Length: 186
Ligand SMILES: C[S@@+](CC[C@H](N)C(=O)[O-])C[C@H]1O[C@@H](n2cnc3c(N)ncnc32)[C@H](O)[C@@H]1O
Image (cartoon, rainbow, N blue to C red):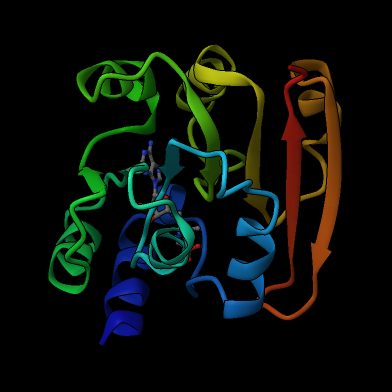
């Protein structure tokens, strides 16, 4: 059912959904691996989709941590509302361009970790730029921005934005994917 919703939403909104399958469990594991769950009090997720990464984050988060998850697609937001009942999750059915605004509403200035699967490569350039600017402004020192992409060509851009960047390749996903692990020095 979720795959049918994804397929029809992907064809209607190719430039925002950016894929025709949700992330595999192997890819989800690789995306959440860099998160220090013992330390993280505030995690932000960009592009929650069906909630596959959302659920994996919640399963490992501290009981006193919060997860602010952005998703612009109403159908995907409905799936998450039906599937996930966890008071630590703040689902924001709005654009990831507004990270700072929603962090403040929830009593935070900065996010310890930002986990993203928004398709920055295919989104309209001004929207992608706004999201990247927000990530840069709201990521805490010592934190990390973990970004899923199907392109390795964002490496130079991220190297200019962050103290260090590692690029990881996950074969066990359709299509195989890249995970950028971008750290901001403490
Ligand atoms: C590639 S899908 C990833 C879905 C899921 N997290 C996964 O890993 O399978 C990208 C998601 O980002 C969402 N998205 C695109 N632009 C967005 C924006 N500006 N703000 C929030 N979400 C956005 C899309 O609707 C879509 O659900």
